Each structure stands twice: as C-alpha cells, then as structure tokens.
Image (cartoon, rainbow, N blue to C red; front, top):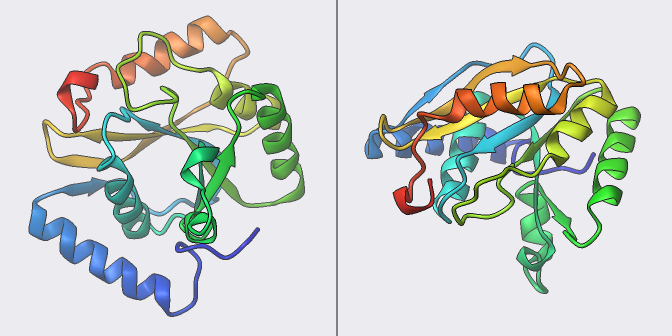
Length: 191
C-alpha cells in the first residue's frame, strides 16, 4: 500500500506527538490501544461533522494505526487529490457500490495488513439506515469489524472492540448499532 500520514518516516512520529498534545489541550481522551494485527474493516461513527476528520486523524495517529479511509470522490479534486490520498483517502464513486466492495476485498487478499475505515452513515447528515458496504467487505474478506467511535458527550474517541460478522446481516447490524446507540456525534442535530 502507499505511504500515508500514518506511515511516513520521521513525519508520522512528529505528527503523533503533536496530536497527543492538541488532544490534551482540547480535553479529548482517546480510548483503545495498539492493535496486535492491523487487518480489519473499521467503522467510524457517528459521522456528523466536518470536524470528525481532524479528530479522526489525531486519534488514529495516537493509536498508531495505519488506516485508509473511504470518502466520496468529490473530496479528491485537483489539485488536492494527492494530499487527500496521503491523508489515507480512497476516493469512492457511490454510484458503483458493488465495485467498491469487490475491489476492497481484493485489496485484503493482496495485503497482509490493511485497515479500511468506513463511515457507515455514508454522509454527515442524519440517517435512519446505515449503508452495509463495510459489513459486506468484512464478511467477504474474512476480517473482523473494529468498532471505532466518537462520543462528544464524553469528549472521547477511539476503538472499542472487534465484531466478527456471522453472516446474518440483520442481526449483526442490530448488534453493531446497539453499541453506537448512546454515542453522540459532534453535531447533535445529525446524531
């Protein structure tokens, strides 16, 4: 995989130190620890604000994760596409969701370590139903789902636990959503 903000020699440790300092200054706690094996699909929820992005970058740096995140292709315009990709971005054309699942599963087949962060809401707006792409990727690639979260009410973010897809989409989505039921996003109107 390509070099990103999470894997750039010299730069990543410096940014990790800066992230820890900024998080302490703004009063946010990051929960979770380093992963023994960095191979999973990570949920990033609730995703309610543009401020989720810098918070996610700082949290991931502090946790020493090496992630790639999915974002709509319009976030990658010229001349910023290279920067967004260095920040770990993977442009997604939401008009072709099955290709995204298939291609991401193929990436898992080709790489021993890979974490792909997916915001299941698919938008910062309030939604009633999550998109299930993250679930299909994890299920088809045979990798667990890492429950990453933001809870603005407690001023904390981080990773909680792994969830292994059972193949029963409805039951699994209900169990995953239950974990997020009490989590408050940065923009309460969209939570």
